[in-house]
Every structure is written in C-alpha cells, then in structure tokens.
Length: 502
Ligand SMILES: Cc1cc2nc3c(=O)[nH]c(=O)nc-3n(C[C@H](O)[C@H](O)[C@H](O)COP(=O)(O)OP(=O)(O)OC[C@H]3O[C@@H](n4cnc5c(N)ncnc54)[C@H](O)[C@@H]3O)c2cc1C
Image 1 (cartoon, rainbow, N blue to C red):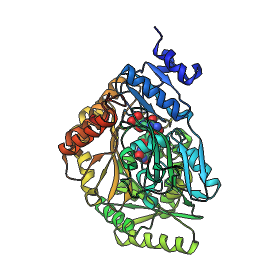
Image 2 (image 1 turned 135 degrees about the vertical axis):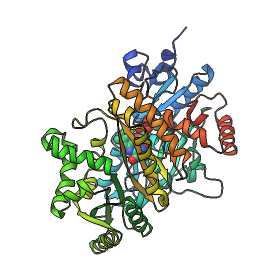
Image 3 (image 1 turned 90 degrees about the vertical axis):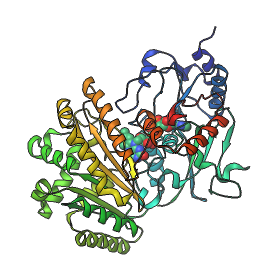
Image 4 (image 1 turned 180 degrees about the horizontal axis):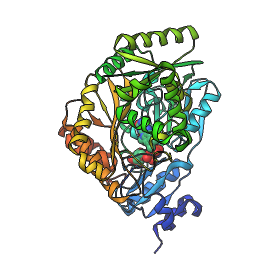
C-alpha cells in the first residue's frame, strides 16, 4: 500500500512532500510554549489546484489538514492541534501582484508581510503593515487570525483592509469573495448585491477553507513622519490620553509599555549595561534612555513612572504633520502626562517591519529565552481597570511565579477609538521545562481572569490557548451557527479540527 507521502507526492512532486521525522519535527511547534505535536506528513503546495487535490485526498482518507503560514503564532495555532495529519506549509505560494491602476495588491497566501510591504514601499504605496511578526507571518495566516497592529490605528487591520480572498473550500472547490466572486474575478471592492463572504474567512483560524490568495487595498505612503513619546505616573491618565488622541484620529500607531517592562529596562540599563544586551534591545533601550535623559525624566521613569507610550504620526504634508504632533503633545500635557521626546516613537517607526518586537521575544540574548502567552482586545474605557486584573493575579501567585522565575508583562497598542489590544502575559524560560509548563498554566489562568472580567476582553487568538477561552464565553446560539456553517462547508471536519471548538 502506498504511504500518505507517496500519494501526496503524486500531486505536488516528490520534492515538496516529506514524512521524515526531522522535517515533521520542525513543524511540530509554533513560537509559543505548547507541547510539540508532529504531523504525519509535511507538504508544500505550489498552487490552488494542488491544494484542492490534497484536500480531496484528505476527505477520501479522513485525514486532518493543518494549514500553516509563518507558524508565528504564540498560542499553539500554527501547528497541529493533534499529533497526526497533513501539515500544509503555504510558504511556497508567495507571489505578489501590485495593480497600481486600481490600487490593489493580490498576494499568494504564503507571502510574508515583510515582502509585501517592501514591494509596496519601493513604489511609494502602503497598506495595513501586518502584525509584529511580519518578517515571518504570512498574509494567509494574518487573514486567518484577523491580525492587527502596524498602522492599524490609521488604516485598520487585516479585516478592514482586505478586498477579498481566494479560498479552497474543505470540499475542494476554489472560490473568490467580494468583487472577485464573478468573472473575470478582479479583487477591488467589498460589499455588493450579494452578502460579502470575505468576513466568513477572516479570523476563521483556517477552519473554513485554505486561503490561497489575499488581496489588499492600497494608498500612497505618507512622505513625512514624526513621533512623540510620553510617560504617566498614573495609568488612568494614560487611558484619557489614548481616548483623546484616538478619537481625533491623530496618529498612525500608538503603543504602550507598562512599569513591569519599565523596571526591567531600568535593570538592564543600570545593572547589565548596554554592552550586555543584544543589538535590538540595545538600540531600543538607548532610544528610550536618550529621550529620558534629554527631557530630564530618568528618575521619574525609574521611581514614579507607571506607563510609557508613544504615538507615530505620518502625513503627506509637513505642516499637517507638525500640527498633529503639537496637538498630541498638548493632549498629553493637559492630561497629566510628561513628554519624553521622539526617539522612542521613531525607533518603532524605523524598525516596525524587522526589529521592533525582537527585544520581547526569544531572539534577544539580553533577555534570555522567553515567551509570551497571548493577548486580547478590551474596551478603551476599561483600560486602566484591565491592568489591575493582571496585577492582582501576579500578587496572588507571587510565590509560584518567583519559584519558577516567571515575570509578568503588560504592553499593547491602541487599535481604534473603540478597542485597545493588551498583552497581559508571563515570561519564562522556554528551554527549562518546569518553567515552560508553569507559563502555560499561568497564561491560561490569566486568560480566564480576563474572560470573567467585564472589561470586554476577548482572546485575540484561538489555538490551544484561546480555544478553551472562547469555549467558556461563546454565546450558545452564535456557537451553533458557527458549528452549522462548519458542518456545511467541511462535512468530514478535516480542516483544523478542534480549532475554535469546531
Ligand atoms: C513577535 C510576535 C509578534 C506578534 N505580533 C502580533 C501583532 O501585532 N498582531 C497580531 O495580530 N498578531 C501578532 N502575532 C501573532 C501572529 O504572528 C500573527 O497573528 C500572524 O498573522 C500569524 O501569521 P502566520 O502566517 O505566522 O500564521 P500561522 O501561525 O502559520 O497560522 C495561524 C493560523 O492560521 C491558519 N492558517 C495559516 N495560513 C493559512 C491559510 N493559507 N489558509 C487557512 N488557514 C491558514 C493556521 O492553521 C493557524 O490556525 C505576533 C507573533 C509574534 C511571534
């Protein structure tokens, strides 16, 4: 009898399929702390027809398919939920077409945000710039996770910017949504005379189809950029500042780091020193401390500071830019904040596509090997209150956290005037198993504390971490609607079975 790999190689060719254990092992994990789960086979399809044929085979054999883009989720999503099945690596499908006439870019699902944005910037164009993991994250993964962040405050996130998707349904048919539903299948507009089904596939975590193309609306990249960094001694003031700035739509990005991170930065700078940390952390640390020194706020930052934040402003006109920066500074001053300077903001701006997040994740020698559980969206009116939930948790569990050398983090960004993304997580040592298991345990309990609260929290992502959380709070009629849709589209439940409780 032919093996699964042999049968798939008849579709994609021998070169693009493997059941060797070292290959399967490489796909057994995403960037989070979750236990590895090896698929039976890894396949790298080259076009939607190959994907369709693989899906057809999986239906006949009743074998699950786990689609994967960059595998850059920290929540156990870009990896098999069960230790078997077909891992569908989409990264070979990475071509990008830019249509400057109609201002749409159509990217194959495996293209990374870094490649999309670099191509666009070379032409003076722009779109939603992707998640913090954009060097690795694929556009198909981002659409499946409904990702947000870089420039979302100005332009919106994936869901707002996407003009339609091409999807291989779990039964093998290939469809395009939005204006591309009809011949000649051009992506340019959402919403028309029939229901726009694009949204069905945004945030579906790959449960309703395999995305093979994602199209993005475009506009011209603003020529001018500037930024403002500030601190507050009380998080309540930060909430007011965020609300005032976002309601006036003054900024392209607005991000924050709270005192758990500030204390750590002070420790790095004062105890470890710039030479003791990796280059990304050094650059970021230096930008912040140069701002603090110049503005005379070092002591305030280290002793009384509760939270720091920055806004980046981008405009086509220097005069409009300068005016907006002035307006932000005025709001900050009038709402109890102290201005730090512009380097903290511009370090983000200049490195958003390649280096900004490194200091927080596994790759900085100065931090050791650490990781984060996951984040979620809350209502802006609950921002200050939402941090208390993490702080109470850290206090109540102080002994266990100290014992396993686990620390808390709280940072995030303002998504729009109605939602703030917060990451109340824990950091530990990925390669020390007891610490790693405790991080999983604590990140799930923190998630549940937030789910129980009334700050509007919803986990950003499902995967292993978020699915349990969703299941605890999904409104039953809504869940059954989702389940019925899933049954209709995927009668044999072969695509990401178990994800989102489906
Ligand atoms: C340092 C760092 C920073 C991050 N910052 C952010 C952030 O700012 N904002 C944010 O939203 N997220 C963030 N993330 C989380 C994650 O990286 C993003 O959500 C990213 O968009 C996931 O894309 P991916 O290609 O890596 O997806 P994967 O991890 O490969 O997959 C994610 C999910 O999508 C499904 N999937 C992938 N490709 C397809 C496809 N073609 N068709 C159907 N289903 C598919 C998978 O089955 C899985 O369920 C961050 C992660 C890291 C490590």
